[in-house]
Image (tube, rainbow, N blue to C red; front, side):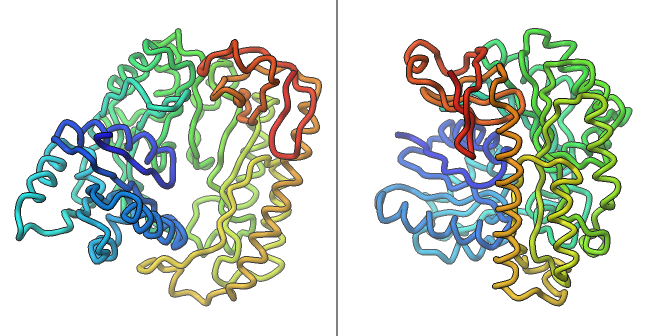
Length: 422
Protein backbone atom coordinates (compact mmCIF):
# COMPACT_ATOMS: atom_id res chain seq x y z
CA UNK A 1 0.00 0.00 0.00
CA UNK A 2 1.40 3.37 -1.01
CA UNK A 3 -0.98 6.06 0.35
CA UNK A 4 -4.05 5.37 2.47
CA UNK A 5 -6.46 8.21 3.21
CA UNK A 6 -8.70 8.09 6.29
CA UNK A 7 -11.59 10.51 5.77
CA UNK A 8 -13.77 12.24 8.34
CA UNK A 9 -16.74 14.53 7.81
CA UNK A 10 -18.53 15.75 4.73
CA UNK A 11 -18.88 14.64 1.12
CA UNK A 12 -16.51 17.41 0.10
CA UNK A 13 -13.81 15.77 2.20
CA UNK A 14 -14.62 12.47 0.49
CA UNK A 15 -14.11 14.06 -2.93
CA UNK A 16 -10.90 15.75 -1.84
CA UNK A 17 -9.48 12.53 -0.45
CA UNK A 18 -9.22 11.21 -3.99
CA UNK A 19 -7.13 14.25 -4.95
CA UNK A 20 -5.01 13.80 -1.81
CA UNK A 21 -4.23 10.19 -2.66
CA UNK A 22 -3.31 11.05 -6.23
CA UNK A 23 -1.09 14.02 -5.40
CA UNK A 24 0.65 12.33 -2.45
CA UNK A 25 1.51 9.29 -4.54
CA UNK A 26 2.73 11.50 -7.39
CA UNK A 27 5.01 13.29 -4.89
CA UNK A 28 6.63 9.96 -4.02
CA UNK A 29 4.96 9.09 -0.74
CA UNK A 30 4.77 5.43 0.22
CA UNK A 31 3.67 3.58 3.35
CA UNK A 32 1.84 6.76 4.32
CA UNK A 33 -1.50 7.38 6.03
CA UNK A 34 -3.19 10.72 5.48
CA UNK A 35 -5.89 11.63 7.99
CA UNK A 36 -8.33 14.10 6.38
CA UNK A 37 -10.03 15.65 9.42
CA UNK A 38 -13.30 17.47 10.15
CA UNK A 39 -13.74 20.42 12.52
CA UNK A 40 -17.50 20.82 12.60
CA UNK A 41 -17.75 19.64 16.23
CA UNK A 42 -15.38 19.06 19.14
CA UNK A 43 -16.36 15.38 18.89
CA UNK A 44 -15.13 15.23 15.29
CA UNK A 45 -11.74 16.57 16.40
CA UNK A 46 -11.62 14.10 19.30
CA UNK A 47 -12.37 11.19 16.98
CA UNK A 48 -9.60 12.26 14.61
CA UNK A 49 -7.07 12.40 17.45
CA UNK A 50 -8.17 9.01 18.71
CA UNK A 51 -7.85 7.52 15.22
CA UNK A 52 -4.35 8.93 14.81
CA UNK A 53 -3.26 7.25 18.05
CA UNK A 54 -4.80 3.96 16.96
CA UNK A 55 -3.15 4.13 13.53
CA UNK A 56 0.26 4.71 15.12
CA UNK A 57 -0.13 1.64 17.32
CA UNK A 58 -1.21 -0.48 14.36
CA UNK A 59 1.28 0.93 11.82
CA UNK A 60 4.37 2.03 13.79
CA UNK A 61 6.55 2.40 10.67
CA UNK A 62 4.09 4.35 8.52
CA UNK A 63 4.26 8.10 7.98
CA UNK A 64 1.17 9.86 9.35
CA UNK A 65 0.19 13.17 7.75
CA UNK A 66 -2.77 15.10 9.15
CA UNK A 67 -4.79 17.55 7.07
CA UNK A 68 -8.37 18.81 6.66
CA UNK A 69 -10.44 21.41 8.49
CA UNK A 70 -9.32 20.50 12.02
CA UNK A 71 -5.68 20.62 10.92
CA UNK A 72 -6.32 24.04 9.37
CA UNK A 73 -8.04 25.51 12.43
CA UNK A 74 -5.97 23.72 15.11
CA UNK A 75 -2.58 22.95 13.52
CA UNK A 76 -0.66 23.03 16.79
CA UNK A 77 -3.08 20.57 18.41
CA UNK A 78 -2.08 17.93 15.87
CA UNK A 79 1.55 19.01 15.55
CA UNK A 80 1.93 18.45 19.30
CA UNK A 81 0.86 14.81 18.96
CA UNK A 82 3.91 12.50 18.96
CA UNK A 83 2.00 10.09 16.69
CA UNK A 84 1.85 12.71 13.91
CA UNK A 85 4.72 13.20 11.46
CA UNK A 86 3.43 16.21 9.52
CA UNK A 87 0.43 18.57 9.49
CA UNK A 88 -0.60 20.36 6.29
CA UNK A 89 -3.41 22.81 5.57
CA UNK A 90 -6.52 22.60 3.44
CA UNK A 91 -4.94 24.48 0.54
CA UNK A 92 -1.73 22.46 0.63
CA UNK A 93 -3.51 19.09 0.68
CA UNK A 94 -4.86 19.56 -2.86
CA UNK A 95 -1.78 20.87 -4.64
CA UNK A 96 1.19 19.12 -6.17
CA UNK A 97 3.41 21.84 -4.73
CA UNK A 98 2.01 21.31 -1.25
CA UNK A 99 2.76 17.61 -1.32
CA UNK A 100 6.21 18.14 -2.87
CA UNK A 101 7.05 20.56 -0.07
CA UNK A 102 5.74 18.12 2.53
CA UNK A 103 7.79 15.30 1.02
CA UNK A 104 10.93 17.46 1.11
CA UNK A 105 10.28 18.34 4.74
CA UNK A 106 10.76 14.71 5.74
CA UNK A 107 14.39 14.98 4.64
CA UNK A 108 15.11 18.15 6.62
CA UNK A 109 15.75 17.90 10.34
CA UNK A 110 14.83 21.54 10.95
CA UNK A 111 11.68 21.64 8.79
CA UNK A 112 8.51 22.79 10.57
CA UNK A 113 6.16 19.99 11.51
CA UNK A 114 3.12 22.01 10.42
CA UNK A 115 2.77 23.54 6.94
CA UNK A 116 -0.48 25.49 7.21
CA UNK A 117 -0.95 28.79 5.39
CA UNK A 118 -3.69 31.43 5.72
CA UNK A 119 -6.77 29.88 4.09
CA UNK A 120 -8.37 33.32 3.77
CA UNK A 121 -5.73 34.13 1.16
CA UNK A 122 -7.20 31.48 -1.17
CA UNK A 123 -9.00 33.30 -4.00
CA UNK A 124 -10.03 30.48 -6.31
CA UNK A 125 -10.79 26.79 -6.33
CA UNK A 126 -8.77 25.02 -8.98
CA UNK A 127 -10.65 22.23 -10.77
CA UNK A 128 -9.37 18.80 -9.81
CA UNK A 129 -10.44 16.35 -12.49
CA UNK A 130 -11.25 13.05 -10.79
CA UNK A 131 -12.42 10.27 -13.07
CA UNK A 132 -12.67 7.46 -10.51
CA UNK A 133 -13.52 7.01 -6.83
CA UNK A 134 -12.07 3.94 -5.18
CA UNK A 135 -14.70 1.78 -3.49
CA UNK A 136 -17.65 4.04 -4.38
CA UNK A 137 -20.52 3.73 -6.83
CA UNK A 138 -21.53 7.41 -6.51
CA UNK A 139 -19.06 10.05 -7.64
CA UNK A 140 -18.57 13.34 -5.80
CA UNK A 141 -17.75 16.49 -7.76
CA UNK A 142 -16.56 19.62 -5.99
CA UNK A 143 -18.20 22.69 -7.49
CA UNK A 144 -17.48 25.19 -4.71
CA UNK A 145 -15.38 25.66 -1.57
CA UNK A 146 -15.44 28.01 1.40
CA UNK A 147 -18.21 30.19 2.82
CA UNK A 148 -18.86 33.92 2.97
CA UNK A 149 -21.37 33.65 5.81
CA UNK A 150 -20.45 33.74 9.46
CA UNK A 151 -22.99 31.72 11.41
CA UNK A 152 -22.17 32.22 15.06
CA UNK A 153 -21.68 28.50 15.79
CA UNK A 154 -19.55 27.61 12.77
CA UNK A 155 -15.77 27.26 12.57
CA UNK A 156 -15.75 25.96 8.99
CA UNK A 157 -15.13 29.30 7.18
CA UNK A 158 -11.85 29.48 9.11
CA UNK A 159 -10.96 26.02 7.87
CA UNK A 160 -12.12 26.53 4.29
CA UNK A 161 -11.79 30.25 3.59
CA UNK A 162 -14.19 32.44 1.65
CA UNK A 163 -16.54 31.13 -1.03
CA UNK A 164 -15.03 30.37 -4.42
CA UNK A 165 -16.45 28.40 -7.33
CA UNK A 166 -15.18 25.97 -9.95
CA UNK A 167 -15.91 27.24 -13.49
CA UNK A 168 -18.88 25.54 -15.15
CA UNK A 169 -16.85 24.16 -18.04
CA UNK A 170 -14.49 22.37 -15.66
CA UNK A 171 -17.43 20.86 -13.76
CA UNK A 172 -19.00 19.62 -17.00
CA UNK A 173 -15.68 18.07 -18.05
CA UNK A 174 -15.34 16.34 -14.69
CA UNK A 175 -18.87 14.90 -14.80
CA UNK A 176 -18.43 13.80 -18.41
CA UNK A 177 -15.23 11.92 -17.49
CA UNK A 178 -16.94 10.20 -14.58
CA UNK A 179 -19.89 9.12 -16.72
CA UNK A 180 -17.44 7.75 -19.30
CA UNK A 181 -16.07 5.58 -16.47
CA UNK A 182 -19.56 4.16 -15.83
CA UNK A 183 -20.61 6.28 -12.88
CA UNK A 184 -24.37 6.58 -13.07
CA UNK A 185 -24.85 8.96 -10.16
CA UNK A 186 -22.93 12.15 -9.47
CA UNK A 187 -23.25 14.25 -6.30
CA UNK A 188 -22.39 17.97 -6.44
CA UNK A 189 -20.52 18.96 -3.29
CA UNK A 190 -19.13 22.04 -1.61
CA UNK A 191 -19.27 23.95 1.65
CA UNK A 192 -22.13 26.22 0.55
CA UNK A 193 -23.11 25.08 -2.93
CA UNK A 194 -26.13 27.36 -3.24
CA UNK A 195 -23.67 30.29 -3.20
CA UNK A 196 -22.16 28.84 -6.37
CA UNK A 197 -21.08 31.26 -9.07
CA UNK A 198 -21.08 34.61 -7.25
CA UNK A 199 -17.34 34.95 -7.91
CA UNK A 200 -17.48 33.80 -11.55
CA UNK A 201 -17.97 36.01 -14.64
CA UNK A 202 -21.68 36.72 -15.04
CA UNK A 203 -22.39 35.35 -11.54
CA UNK A 204 -24.23 32.18 -12.64
CA UNK A 205 -26.36 30.43 -10.02
CA UNK A 206 -26.34 26.79 -8.94
CA UNK A 207 -29.46 26.22 -11.03
CA UNK A 208 -27.59 27.36 -14.14
CA UNK A 209 -24.83 24.86 -13.44
CA UNK A 210 -27.35 22.05 -12.86
CA UNK A 211 -29.15 22.79 -16.14
CA UNK A 212 -25.85 22.91 -18.04
CA UNK A 213 -24.82 19.54 -16.64
CA UNK A 214 -28.15 17.92 -17.51
CA UNK A 215 -28.00 19.43 -21.01
CA UNK A 216 -24.36 18.75 -21.89
CA UNK A 217 -24.03 15.32 -20.24
CA UNK A 218 -27.26 13.66 -21.43
CA UNK A 219 -25.91 10.21 -20.63
CA UNK A 220 -25.75 11.05 -16.90
CA UNK A 221 -28.45 8.96 -15.23
CA UNK A 222 -28.70 10.61 -11.81
CA UNK A 223 -27.61 13.99 -10.46
CA UNK A 224 -27.82 14.63 -6.73
CA UNK A 225 -27.12 17.68 -4.58
CA UNK A 226 -25.39 17.69 -1.23
CA UNK A 227 -26.59 20.00 1.54
CA UNK A 228 -28.18 23.26 0.34
CA UNK A 229 -29.24 26.51 1.95
CA UNK A 230 -32.91 26.80 1.00
CA UNK A 231 -32.95 30.60 1.16
CA UNK A 232 -30.40 30.67 -1.70
CA UNK A 233 -32.17 28.17 -3.97
CA UNK A 234 -32.72 29.92 -7.31
CA UNK A 235 -35.52 29.68 -9.87
CA UNK A 236 -33.51 27.58 -12.34
CA UNK A 237 -32.70 25.05 -9.64
CA UNK A 238 -36.38 24.63 -8.78
CA UNK A 239 -37.25 24.47 -12.49
CA UNK A 240 -34.72 21.67 -13.05
CA UNK A 241 -36.10 19.78 -10.06
CA UNK A 242 -39.62 20.10 -11.42
CA UNK A 243 -38.86 19.16 -15.02
CA UNK A 244 -35.90 16.77 -15.18
CA UNK A 245 -36.29 13.42 -13.43
CA UNK A 246 -32.52 12.91 -13.54
CA UNK A 247 -32.17 15.49 -10.75
CA UNK A 248 -32.92 13.34 -7.73
CA UNK A 249 -35.98 14.19 -5.58
CA UNK A 250 -33.98 14.42 -2.37
CA UNK A 251 -32.80 17.69 -0.82
CA UNK A 252 -30.79 17.99 2.38
CA UNK A 253 -31.39 21.39 4.00
CA UNK A 254 -29.19 23.39 6.32
CA UNK A 255 -31.95 24.42 8.76
CA UNK A 256 -30.19 24.21 12.17
CA UNK A 257 -33.22 25.27 14.27
CA UNK A 258 -36.97 25.69 14.14
CA UNK A 259 -37.09 28.71 16.44
CA UNK A 260 -36.86 32.25 15.05
CA UNK A 261 -34.96 33.79 17.94
CA UNK A 262 -32.39 30.99 17.94
CA UNK A 263 -32.03 31.35 14.16
CA UNK A 264 -31.29 35.05 14.63
CA UNK A 265 -28.75 34.29 17.35
CA UNK A 266 -27.17 31.75 15.01
CA UNK A 267 -27.01 34.52 12.37
CA UNK A 268 -28.88 32.36 9.90
CA UNK A 269 -30.53 34.09 6.94
CA UNK A 270 -33.92 32.38 7.10
CA UNK A 271 -36.78 32.12 9.56
CA UNK A 272 -38.97 29.15 10.43
CA UNK A 273 -41.70 30.24 7.99
CA UNK A 274 -39.14 30.43 5.15
CA UNK A 275 -38.15 26.79 5.66
CA UNK A 276 -41.75 25.60 5.74
CA UNK A 277 -42.67 27.66 2.66
CA UNK A 278 -39.67 26.30 0.73
CA UNK A 279 -40.63 22.68 1.42
CA UNK A 280 -44.22 23.39 0.39
CA UNK A 281 -43.07 25.04 -2.85
CA UNK A 282 -40.79 22.16 -3.76
CA UNK A 283 -43.51 19.59 -3.08
CA UNK A 284 -45.86 21.45 -5.40
CA UNK A 285 -43.23 21.28 -8.12
CA UNK A 286 -42.04 17.71 -7.39
CA UNK A 287 -44.51 15.97 -5.08
CA UNK A 288 -42.29 12.99 -4.28
CA UNK A 289 -39.36 15.08 -3.01
CA UNK A 290 -37.91 13.85 0.28
CA UNK A 291 -36.16 16.24 2.66
CA UNK A 292 -33.32 15.78 5.09
CA UNK A 293 -31.99 18.49 7.39
CA UNK A 294 -29.18 19.46 9.74
CA UNK A 295 -30.50 20.46 13.18
CA UNK A 296 -28.59 21.60 16.26
CA UNK A 297 -29.89 20.71 19.73
CA UNK A 298 -29.04 22.83 22.75
CA UNK A 299 -27.77 26.01 21.09
CA UNK A 300 -26.85 28.64 23.71
CA UNK A 301 -29.91 30.28 25.34
CA UNK A 302 -32.26 27.63 23.90
CA UNK A 303 -35.23 27.11 26.21
CA UNK A 304 -37.50 24.07 26.27
CA UNK A 305 -40.11 25.98 24.25
CA UNK A 306 -37.51 26.96 21.66
CA UNK A 307 -36.38 23.35 21.40
CA UNK A 308 -39.99 22.27 20.98
CA UNK A 309 -40.14 24.48 17.90
CA UNK A 310 -37.30 22.41 16.39
CA UNK A 311 -39.13 19.19 17.22
CA UNK A 312 -42.28 20.56 15.60
CA UNK A 313 -40.36 21.61 12.49
CA UNK A 314 -39.85 17.94 11.59
CA UNK A 315 -43.59 17.60 10.91
CA UNK A 316 -44.07 21.15 9.62
CA UNK A 317 -41.47 20.64 6.89
CA UNK A 318 -42.12 16.92 6.46
CA UNK A 319 -38.49 15.99 7.16
CA UNK A 320 -37.38 12.40 6.70
CA UNK A 321 -33.62 12.24 7.28
CA UNK A 322 -32.21 14.18 10.23
CA UNK A 323 -28.56 14.93 10.94
CA UNK A 324 -28.70 15.94 14.61
CA UNK A 325 -25.80 17.76 16.24
CA UNK A 326 -25.65 18.37 19.98
CA UNK A 327 -24.34 21.94 20.19
CA UNK A 328 -20.56 21.95 20.48
CA UNK A 329 -18.85 25.25 21.35
CA UNK A 330 -16.00 25.86 18.93
CA UNK A 331 -13.26 28.15 20.27
CA UNK A 332 -13.17 31.46 18.43
CA UNK A 333 -16.84 31.49 17.44
CA UNK A 334 -19.39 33.97 18.91
CA UNK A 335 -21.66 31.14 20.10
CA UNK A 336 -18.89 29.81 22.32
CA UNK A 337 -19.14 33.07 24.31
CA UNK A 338 -22.93 32.97 24.70
CA UNK A 339 -24.69 31.57 27.81
CA UNK A 340 -24.43 27.80 27.43
CA UNK A 341 -27.11 25.17 27.96
CA UNK A 342 -26.09 22.47 30.47
CA UNK A 343 -24.34 19.57 28.72
CA UNK A 344 -26.73 16.95 30.07
CA UNK A 345 -29.65 19.00 28.70
CA UNK A 346 -27.94 19.34 25.32
CA UNK A 347 -27.40 15.59 25.11
CA UNK A 348 -30.94 14.82 26.21
CA UNK A 349 -32.42 17.18 23.62
CA UNK A 350 -30.24 15.69 20.89
CA UNK A 351 -31.47 12.22 21.85
CA UNK A 352 -35.10 13.37 21.74
CA UNK A 353 -34.58 14.98 18.35
CA UNK A 354 -32.99 11.79 17.01
CA UNK A 355 -35.94 9.76 18.32
CA UNK A 356 -38.28 12.19 16.57
CA UNK A 357 -36.27 11.74 13.38
CA UNK A 358 -36.32 7.96 13.66
CA UNK A 359 -40.12 8.04 13.96
CA UNK A 360 -40.37 10.32 10.90
CA UNK A 361 -38.10 7.98 8.92
CA UNK A 362 -40.19 4.96 9.94
CA UNK A 363 -43.36 6.70 8.73
CA UNK A 364 -41.73 7.43 5.40
CA UNK A 365 -40.50 3.85 5.04
CA UNK A 366 -44.03 2.61 5.82
CA UNK A 367 -45.24 4.54 2.79
CA UNK A 368 -42.60 2.99 0.54
CA UNK A 369 -43.75 -0.59 1.10
CA UNK A 370 -45.38 -1.87 -2.09
CA UNK A 371 -43.65 0.67 -4.35
CA UNK A 372 -41.20 -0.17 -7.13
CA UNK A 373 -38.06 1.95 -6.95
CA UNK A 374 -35.04 2.55 -9.16
CA UNK A 375 -32.17 1.42 -6.96
CA UNK A 376 -28.49 2.22 -7.45
CA UNK A 377 -26.58 -0.89 -6.31
CA UNK A 378 -23.84 0.21 -3.90
CA UNK A 379 -22.50 -3.12 -2.68
CA UNK A 380 -23.26 -6.83 -2.81
CA UNK A 381 -26.24 -6.39 -0.50
CA UNK A 382 -27.28 -2.69 -0.40
CA UNK A 383 -28.44 0.09 -2.69
CA UNK A 384 -30.10 3.53 -2.68
CA UNK A 385 -33.40 4.68 -4.13
CA UNK A 386 -33.89 7.94 -6.00
CA UNK A 387 -35.03 9.40 -2.67
CA UNK A 388 -31.81 8.28 -0.94
CA UNK A 389 -33.44 5.54 1.13
CA UNK A 390 -31.10 2.62 1.76
CA UNK A 391 -32.31 -0.72 0.41
CA UNK A 392 -31.34 -4.18 1.62
CA UNK A 393 -31.14 -6.45 -1.39
CA UNK A 394 -32.70 -9.92 -1.46
CA UNK A 395 -30.27 -12.81 -1.40
CA UNK A 396 -31.36 -14.07 -4.80
CA UNK A 397 -30.20 -10.80 -6.39
CA UNK A 398 -26.85 -10.50 -4.66
CA UNK A 399 -24.75 -12.48 -7.13
CA UNK A 400 -25.98 -11.32 -10.55
CA UNK A 401 -26.10 -7.53 -10.01
CA UNK A 402 -22.89 -5.50 -10.16
CA UNK A 403 -22.26 -2.49 -7.95
CA UNK A 404 -23.06 0.66 -9.89
CA UNK A 405 -26.03 -0.80 -11.77
CA UNK A 406 -29.48 0.79 -11.52
CA UNK A 407 -32.32 -1.72 -11.28
CA UNK A 408 -36.06 -1.71 -10.56
CA UNK A 409 -36.87 -3.40 -7.25
CA UNK A 410 -40.15 -3.98 -5.46
CA UNK A 411 -40.13 -2.79 -1.85
CA UNK A 412 -41.71 -5.40 0.42
CA UNK A 413 -40.93 -4.24 3.97
CA UNK A 414 -38.55 -2.23 6.15
CA UNK A 415 -36.74 -2.67 9.43
CA UNK A 416 -37.09 0.92 10.69
CA UNK A 417 -33.81 2.02 9.12
CA UNK A 418 -33.75 0.65 5.60
CA UNK A 419 -36.09 -0.77 3.00
CA UNK A 420 -36.21 -4.47 2.15
CA UNK A 421 -36.57 -5.43 -1.52
CA UNK A 422 -37.85 -8.48 -3.33
